Length: 51
Image 1 (tube, rainbow, N blue to C red):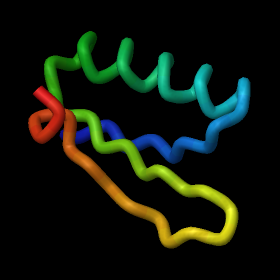
Image 2: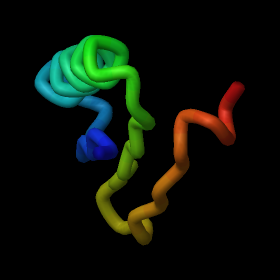
Image 3: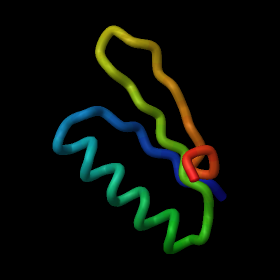
Image 4: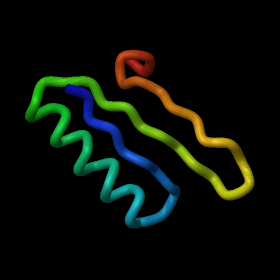
């Protein structure tokens, strides 16, 4: 199973990302972060692409 989280550059977005990292580590699975900025298309990146 993969953990997926949506991220915005807000305090809530940072907290959601932090929680998702903890959950993915706990489960020993991939984390997919979907980044969205107002006025820009959403993008997705797997944690394995950032290592």
